[in-house]
Amino acid sequence: KPKDIALSPIQNSYRDKICLNGIWNFKKDSANQGESQQWYNGLNHFRQIAVPGSWNEQFTDMRDYMAWGWYETETYIPRSWKNDKIYIRVNDATYAAKIWVNGKAVGEHEGCHVPFAFELNNYINWEASNRITIKVENILKPERVPTGEVPGSAFGNFPNANYDFFPYAGLNRSVELYSVPSVASIHDITVRPDFEGTTGFMNVEIEQKGALSSGKIIVEGFGKKIEKSVSFTEGKAKTKVDIPDVHLWSPETPDLYDVTVQLSQNGKVVDSYTLKTGVRTVGVTENEILLNGKPVFLNGFGKHEDFPINGRGSAYPVMVKDFELMKWTGANSFRTTHYPYDEEYYHMADREGIMVIGETPAVGLYFAGDSVQLSKRQKTCKQYIQEMIYRDKNHPSIIMWCVANEPSDKATLGFSVMRKTKEEKERMKNMFAESFSLAKSLDPTRLVMYVGVMMGPKEWFELTDVIAINRYYGWYTAPGDAETGGYVVGKEIDKLHKQFKKPCMITEFGADTYPGCHDEQAEMFSEEYQVEFIKAYLDVADERPYVTGMHVWNFADFKTSQAIFRFGGFNYKGVFTRDRKPKMAAHYLRERWMNSNQNK
Ligand code: GCB
Image 1: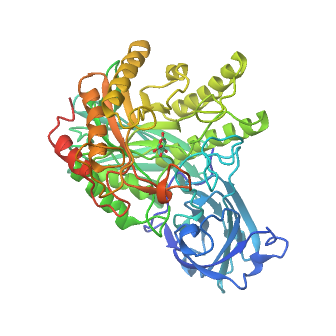
Image 2 (image 1 turned 180 degrees about the vertical axis):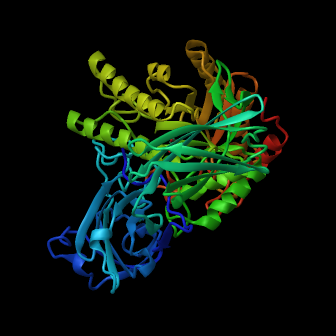
């Protein structure tokens, strides 16, 4: 189980937090000599860096730099925290990080876009300031997830990531210190919602650090306050809260309840944690995805956390604008391609009524490499599933988990395909099946899916709840011929549905479009062609009752590694430009989605 990341830091009468965002000291360590030279005792000849933010965008000499970088800041710890347990939480260090506090090593973590936390009590100076040092590297490797430097990869990218989005490095999200009561503290809360008729249920599981025996759950909202006592055995408690006349969460009514958990000792509250969540169910039939028992159609996008100069760094004005623009187009959903996003995205989605497919960083998984690399990768994929579900499980907006984007049993994408034996293929499917059963066992209340690549193995769809495919007929194949593209995707999806009898989604389809490029006869890269392409695919969906969602690739243009098919270092499949101006296709989607009956 991942450590200490289930509940994000909050402030209330029992808990406190300090956000360390701002300008830090930074030093490049290309030769990886910082540890032997004890840079954790203080950096010298450093530069300034903004946290959060990717280092690749902030300096004139570090765009493609993926090796070691040292971050350093200082902070005092408030005296009021003296009796508390104190933690540091790093919300994203891409890719691997090691932390020192006052020159002492505190902990290490591998993996990007998921938080990690360590207890600091033994490392703190109370009367002086505390030096916090974080060493980060993002060296691309085939055994890492996402993968890079895959031998024989057809991508030909520089930097050599096995995917197209730029491998932005560094502290991309906030770094926080926080305190929790030391006698006992709430460690994890899992709320599994359900309803019957007009009564809602919350099945609540609580874990504490400590050995207190009693606590309370308070569910509050819409003029009601429901309180229930709970008792703990071995630090755990479980109960079911009934909510009469429940307000269900849905895109039309994103209604949220406050769920407060309290721990008490001798009748006195010791710790309290409040989260907002909703009551809704997710299900599936042969043809439909069901939300609260009713079919929903997912209109929306694949996205990226990507913006000029911020790189992959959290940029809340951009996030708010993106929700505005998604709603402006009439979208009701998005997939967190290709990694879990900053937690604020899910809070926004909960409040705005946007349905989310939460995806792990498992992208670029081609089954190249030796068996040691493959098992290491597999372990990381499973770690991500745990960390993501552990962090995000209480968001009603998340209706599906996506365990991987475009994994393939081929050695590389497309060209130099290595022939695999039957046993090898079996082994890959089994590895993949492990991810599905892990996600299902951690969260039986949501759908679990993966996203299939063009020419990828079909038999893996046996594992998924929803058939999701990324298709680019009319772009990478049949270039310039959107009509054929639509025809081919229609034929393929009919076959898939007939074979697997599951609802289908096209999770990516799109055409690179240079903003301002026009043609009276639609031609590739023109705004007209992007509209024609999107129209052809949306028509395919409209004609098929078992198609339950269409996510355009991409919401906005984004930075890529350099490659011959990425002009200027960008993927131009956005319907908005990178600075969020609409292309013709954004207007087209708005016209089409605003007038569509989303629950067809
Ligand atoms: C895909 C990938 C996505 C790429 C996209 C493209 O299938 O999932 O990450 O950006 O194709 O534009 O090639």
